[in-house]
Amino acid sequence: MLIGNRTPTRVLTGDRPTGPLHLGHYFGSLQNRVRLQREGVQLFLVIADYQVLTDRDVAERLQENVEGLVLDYLAAGVDPQETVVFTHSAVPALNQLLLPFLSLVSVSELRRNPTVKDEIAHSQQSAVSGLMFTYPVHQAADILFCKANLVPVGQDQLPHLEATRTIARRFNDRYGPVFPVPEAMLSEAPLLLGTDGGKMSKSRGNAISLSATADETARLLRGAKTDSDRRISYDPDQRPEVSSLLLLAALCRQTDPYTVAEEVGDAGAEKLKLLVTEAVNDYLAPMRARRRELAQDLGLVRELLRRGNARANQVAEATLTEVRDAMGTPVY
Ligand code: ATP
Ligand code: MG
Image (tube, rainbow, N blue to C red):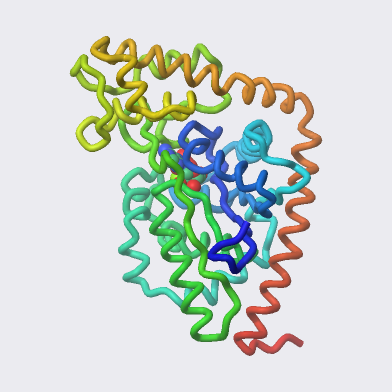
């Protein structure tokens, strides 16, 4: 795949190992990752384990969450032979990029980032840490260490991606052209809402996991927030919760949300929720079956991580050498 008929695409994106992936991840980013990979694009997936600590004091159940993420990737169609999956903490050279990158942003730029503000509002930390403020710079290192030029993400990540673009441009201006200036890739569902009407998030207790059972899915959707208007219509501005449910059903059925709204008509939110439940459970059934099968043997998952970490280390070492050369840092 070519961007602007120039550069072959390399994609970096990833997730924090804070819990199982949910429908927001799938329709916000994961589905696009799999599509790009099928077009032959080189995919790097970072499991951002250090970044778990941005909004909580201690990272819990890391191994279970890391391996669970890999199972979710594989079940969704990520090809273990083609894709580099690695954990942030296993690639020290990547973190070496942080220090020069930090010198390229101002404190007020870090303070202004709207996603950081939102994450502080939902933070479980005893006090807002320096890691929270420097989070976008970590992400710049994650993206730029492998010179990715395309980043499939949800809407919440756009300010972070803007920070990465600024860092790449400033580095290139100061030291010479080393980094691409990457583009975000948004999906049709850049901000899927959770059952409480806020952004669906692993850590906010409002998510429907890809790996949930059909019964759990039904229970969670029964409790989803809607409104009292029995006539169901697609209107994301005025009726965000109902519209997000319509969009979800439409994505699962590969149709559009207006068609789904017409089908429900004036049968009310209860009917809508039943329809969404069926659409989601039908769509996810093969993925869920594949995941159960893969979970029988975590050997494949661990091998994938070992290989991915080794490859990411090679790439990060090479980039770090280029960065040191560009900056005139002597190496003895
Ligand atoms: P946490 O609550 O722990 O931050 P999260 O659900 O926000 O978890 P992340 O690991 O922070 O998930 O995000 C991984 C990727 O998924 C990012 O690209 C993010 O933009 C995307 N994403 C997360 N939630 C949604 C959502 N509700 N709709 C669309 N994309 C989403
Ligand atoms: Mg998040």
